[in-house]
Length: 254
Image (cartoon, rainbow, N blue to C red; front, side, top):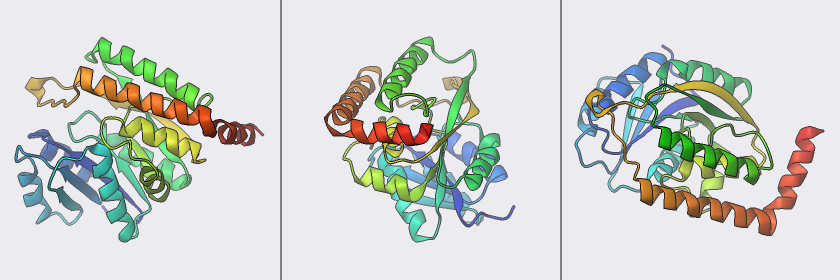
């Protein structure tokens, strides 16, 4: 496989256990280069990946000494990638939920429309927790209100290709979007900034503990964080973003 000079895969990881190495090996089959951003892990899961990187030229590991959240890990990787001339990154989870076999299709879509944010539209299996799906629908509805309609089919699904320059710009413009709120905040702010969107289907697996599944989702903490996120976005929209968004929608429909 010839490594891409413009598009790479980011895998942020925090205490992912043995799934991290399995995910990295699978991704390397479909795309190179692959960068793993280890976000202050304390379980030693990065050791096997660091060892693999000694012999695998398509793999790089960035170790962040303390846990700062997914958004900060992606920002760290994005800025490093920009310095090396990359323009786009597909971000995916380290725990095996996201489909490595869809990387090529998403990258191709991004290469055909380099200005666009290529978003995954999740296709869930029967094992997906019903409570999580109901909460997800609430976020979908709120984001549709925050962008005045369609364009972001699922704000929480983290399998997506970002154009790096706009992503870094919007993350640097806010203090939010650093932890569980990263995926929806990044998508909404990129939309507000005029970044076009493409939505493509991709499967999403919820792995059991027996399969090595790891979840850092905390029901109360992370739902409070999401409430605060949407409160911030709606307040900003109502106070000063609405006119620019209205004009953007007018341009999109013309």
